[in-house]
Amino acid sequence: MLEDLTQRLESIFKKLRGYGKLTENNITDSMKEIRRALLEADVNYKVVKDFISSVQERSVGQDVLRSITPGQLIVKIVHDELIKLFGQTTTDIKTAGIPPTIIMLAGLQGSGKTTFAGKLATFLSKKGKHPMLVAADIYRPAAIEQLDIVGKSVNIPVYSEDVKNPIKICQNAISEARRRSCDVLILDTAGRLHIDDAMMQELEEIKAAIKPHEILFVADGMTGQDAVNTAREFCDRLEFDGIALTKLDGDTRGGAALSIRAVTQKPIKFIGIGEKFDAIEQFYPERMASRILGMGDVVSLVEKAQETIDREKAAKLEKKLRKQEFTLEDFYDQLQQIKKMGPLDQLLGMIPGIGSQIKDVKVDDGSFTRIEAIINSMTLQERRNPKILNGSRRRRIALGSGTRVQDVNQLLNQFGQMKKMLKRMQKMPFGGLRRIPLGPGIGTI
Image (tube, one colour):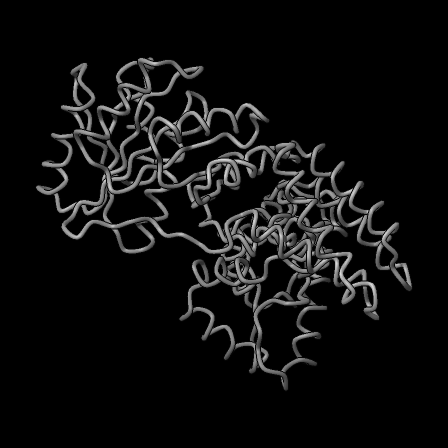
């Protein structure tokens, strides 16, 4: 996510920190480099102009020029200004006093509205809501079938009708939601390949008839500057409440999408960070600013852990660790918990100082699969007592798991190192899997 911009800014700030004393010339040169980095990341030029002007105005103050650590102060100023650019505060979805809450999704065709509808439904389900998806796109071929597939994938009901009246479909969906005790309706409306008056008029009519509590403009994070122009037109005609950015994981630039907030003055509410239906995050300006500046995002990492880690299993595991009874079965369970949190490179990127170190490192998530295959090829007795694994048993496990004997040996060696490490750490409070080897090809966390 925005990797190019992060790398460029880190390089600029490294140079700034190297100066014992900053002058106005140093600062001016740095601002030119930051401006170039933002423009190359596809951030809107007007947004860049205002941003650089604010940063430079604060940077040439006496507090910065006389500071013992001027480079650090400028990093803080850039961080503060990025937070302002992104809206400063997190904005929640509006909810209805009397259910259901109606959320209308709008955007161009191909922006990812249907997939985002499934992601949003998944997100709200985890918050204790009971959403229903509504197929209000009557034009795109197979749009209803696609939403049905999405609904089945996330176990969310889908309402559709074989009629050519999206307003009637949405009105009937409200009645059906109340009948089925669904407290959130997500309307997947029609889009076009480009903005036209017919599409905008239809959206305006749906808005007037249904009166949604929330209208989200869904923007493709990979569309470049055109996303800003599209957002402006949608905002003028529809007056949407917030922005959902999709496919941010698929573009190393993505600056245009982040310009939408400054251009429309509407808050970014959600970002899509992957292909899976749980790859959605509520947008936090401060966290995004920290990620872009390579400071990591520990809060989001902790939240992911809290969502996926089974507390009862964690408590049992802590007791086993204290008694030094940790087995390959327990190790396997922990791998399953980590896998649920998302791709390993994304998780490592949230740790301060790690993102820049792994930018050229290929993180092999396939190592999880190899480890699982090896452990699954063991008998229950072998998992609980790896000491009995002689040469013939190791060859059988390698053959059964489709791996090499060397892979089996490497896993067992790292497991042995882990147990020794845990033994040394037994007097320390248990803090999860930090610094524990994960297995062949993965490394440690």
